[in-house]
Structure formats: structure tokens, C-alpha cells
Image: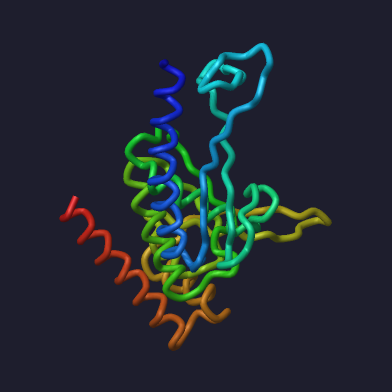
Length: 217
């Protein structure tokens, strides 16, 4: 009885959660993406009888759970580890975390190369979602996209250099106009002119977004 009720609750919740995740994926630059949470049972001759069949019982119920994903309309849904690219996996994780924000207890979230294949409006949406998560989690993000970097509360730049035949990495925080110059470099490779103006605009827009979000809760 308890196992059947648990399965029924999971099926109901999984359908709604999958719809929400698919919707967020579209915002994050994967239009037409579909995410499905598939629940199935494993037959077992020595298992528990349920609806005329014997199935294996696990410590957390009867269900085996699999995440299925399709990045484009018309493509077959397959397990995410078989079809999703690195950038798609990062955005899928971001979408899931966004939808599960109210029940997630993970303190630190790390996103690497989440901007792969992304630009423009989608990059802005990703930056906003990451910042929203950062209000209740520590979020670390490696990115080459200026619109995402501009949304960070703290911005670090990583550089590599060679000395005495060895390669070293240097990490430094950038602030104020130094940060605008780094955003300009990310945009066009230069730190002056139109690119610098754009970097400053991105920082100003990010500041305004955060102020509005804080006021609305």
C-alpha cells in the first residue's frame, strides 16, 4: 500500500516537474527541448505482488527513475548521458535546480562552460537564473560570456603565464571599472571604445535587475 502510494505521488510530481524544466530550458536557449522523468518497475519472481505482477522492492520504493532528454523537436528522447552535450548538461542542471529551488539542500553549485553555444538573450537569461540561485546557494560559474559574468556578485579573472619554463595560473578579483574592462575584453578582445561602453552597460543593467529582484522578494 505505501509503495503504491509513493509511486503514484512520484508519477504525478514527475510530470509537472518535467514540464517546468522543459519550459526553463527554452528560456535558457534550448528551444524545443524536452525533458522527461521516466518511472518504471523491475520484474522479480521473488518480489512484491503489485496489480497482478511481482516487482522488486527497493529501500525507497518500487520505482527506477531515468532522466530522458531531447534537445530538438522531433528527436527521440534518450537518457541524458547519451545525448546531451556539456553545455546542454549544464543548462539542464540549472533548469532542474531552478525548479527544485524550494527543496534543494545542496549548499554549493558549480557550473562549468554553461555558455557553450549560447549568446544574446539566452545568455542574459542564464545569468539571471544563476543569480537567483545564488540568493540561497553558493554558485561558482566558469564562463566566457560577458552577459553571464556581469550578473556575478564577485568576478574573478583567471590568467595563465609561463615563468622559468613552468606554467602558472593566477586568479584575481576585478572590481568597478577594471571589471567593465574585463567584460569589454570578453566581448571583443579590446578594452576601449564601444566594447568598454557595452561592458559598463551590462554592469548597470545587472545592478538594476538585482535591485528590482530584491524589492519583489
